[in-house]
Structures are given as C-alpha cells and as structure tokens.
Image (tube, rainbow, N blue to C red; front, side):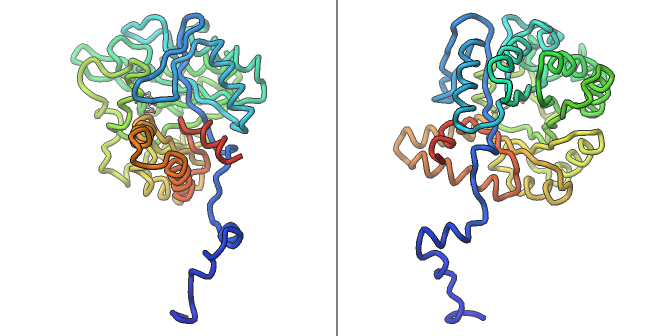
Length: 324
Ligand code: PBG
C-alpha cells in the first residue's frame, strides 16, 4: 500500500521506536584494534598522519592492549617494526623478533585477549616489497611461500591466536595451513586478507611502518581497484585453501565487495578500515569540518551493514568508549 496508508516516518518518530527497528548494531565485541609494535625500550612515537595512534615499544603495547580489553575489544592486530631490515625479511621469522616478543608479552599479561599477527614481509625487507625480489625487480611468488610459512609457524609458536597473511601471494593460505598443521598448530585459525587492493589509502600506514616499496609499486600482487569479480574469486580460493575468516581491504571504497564476498562465501568476514580512511576522518574533524564521533560511528555502522562481521579499525578504542 502506498502513501498515504504507508508512512515510513511512523517508525522514525522517537528514539525508542528507532531502536526497536534498527537493523545493524555496533558492538565493541566486533572490533579488532591494530597496533604498531616497535623494538626498543620505553618508546611511544606519534604517527603524524594518524593522530591518536603511536608506535609503541612492547611494554607500552602491553599496557595499551589492557586498555582495549577493558573497553570490551576482544582482539588486537599486531604489526612489527624491527630494529633492522634485510633483503629477505628474516626479522619476520626470528623467534626473538619484535612481533614474537610482543605476542608472548601480551598473552602473558592478558591471556584472554586475542592476538592476531599480521603476516607479511614488507615491514622486514630492505626493499619494502611483500616477497622475494628477483634480480629484475619482480616478486617471486613461489619462493615467498616458504618464507611466509616459516613466519606463520614462528608467530604461532610465540602464542598468536590468529595468523593474518596480508602479502597477496597466490597459494599462501594453503602453504601456511600445511606448515601450521605440520608443526601441530592445527587449531590456529587463518584470517586471510583475501581481497586486498593496491590502494592509495595505505599511505599513512606505510609511513608508520616505514614499509613503502623502495622501487615500483604493489600492483603486481595487490588487486586492481576496478575488479569486483576477481575479489570474489580471491575469497573463494582462500576459503578452499583453508582460510577460517576472510577479509576485504580497504573497507569504505569497497563496501559493495564486502556484501558480495559475504553473500557468495557465507564465511566469517572482516573488513579493514585502513589508515587512510582513519586519517581522512581525523583530519576533517580536526579542521572542524565534521563531527568526529558521529562520522566515525556512521562509518563503522555502514561497514557492518554492508556485511562485515568483524571491523578492524584504528577508531576501535574511541568507538568502544562512545558505545558504552
Ligand atoms: C602489509 C600491510 C599493509 C597494511 C596492512 N598490512 C600495507 C601495504 O600493503 O602496503 C595497510 C593497513 C593500513 O593502511 O591501515 N602488507
């Protein structure tokens, strides 16, 4: 029945009725808080393009994960900033590497908090690429798989609850699953960065992690922002290779793909509200162009409405506070 019998405004009249018919709810229990853990003692360095996010030495990271847990956030995602980098990225699978030490320290202090470890070589390689670079500058897919598998095992051994490969090599989920299983980490889940696009929105992150490629770009392994069908194929392949949770990244420019991946795979799905998305809102809010709290909550709600079960976001602590 059309207007005047039907009036959708009836269910918008009061806060109570709006709450009753609300389709999507935000909950701190769906957030993952990403953190940058650096080598060194007593370090806390602001990241210029990401106000409110710092590079933290391990003791500070342990304290901050405690704050996140207090706010009802169940998981953190760790990125390691090693003391030195080399051609191969060997800091990634060093059992005494920064991410391994941080994982042990956090799990010891907060055993219930889930530690998700980002698995990639770009923070550890001197050239900043996510894999083994051949003399001609191209990235060697199959040679990289072995290094990723080694890193996954080292992270699991350190106590990581979830392993999250972000490199975009073909076949990495299968290779990591096999390596974990062989080392008796059969119960460690894989959260795969399945549809990860070659995006301009990683700019602040690369400054934070000092991981911008020294030459070229990541377009030969990360996805073309124009491709949606291919994102679905990436997600299906990761599911077949044994991923437990899939991810679409970035979030806001790819809400359509969050929906499509959810509908085609029916898998648990994460979306990564990345550094550039965070920087945009923080900059606009600082300039007084929009209200930070409502813009952030609207953004996170839209990511959940699109179909993400899990939202990885630098806003997690602020949003959790506002949702209290
Ligand atoms: C590592 C990695 C990146 C991000 C997460 N893991 C950077 C990249 O691929 O260049 C970006 C996260 C963000 O921008 O918040 N490969």
